[in-house]
Length: 282
Image 1 (cartoon, rainbow, N blue to C red):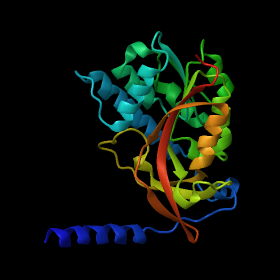
Image 2: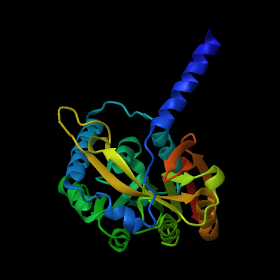
Image 3: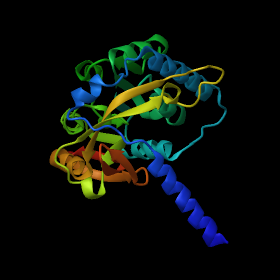
Image 4: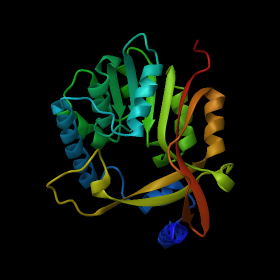
């Protein structure tokens, strides 16, 4: 009986996987972008801003500090490892309206000296409307975001690289900005037979607008879909890019492998993260 139930569960999982619709493959990021919405979608930005505001209020009202998931534990590990002798000056690429900052401030307030976020112009404007804190600022380009930092201690990119037109170039740019450490997380890469691909795979993802931002937005009716280009680089290319510009300290496998059908081919992907430091840092 137990074996039959296990086999039934496996069969159900395989049926669900095969039932997922194939993703369209594009010849370039620009082609996928023309067929997509963007993170400038006012509906998406409004949802993220509202969720972040409520998330910040919930954290502030909580009588205890809680580590709620593996990602939270991972960022706390990184912050405890990086420059432990002084509060950190942090650049976050793609930090939306600051949920990551508010979470760290709640759990390890003494570790933050300054937190600078670079985002799309519309998202940065939304963050600036309600996040009136001396330690936190929002910017629409890397030059402005880094100019407000007194030191370049840590650069963070959470779930960002795969939405860039060239993830490897964005990664190189981050590693070459002169930060002592670079922390990348929630990044989709091709593994298995596609791990060594030289050129990234371009596709498009569709999500519920209500899925964006931290937590849930209770009491609000949010309908609709949002779509964004998705650029998937090979695992080996990501690893080689890091090794060429710095020293890889820790590697995080953040999900199980899963198979996406992109165009006519199956592509095995995984979410990964890593912490790297400048090669010259002692």
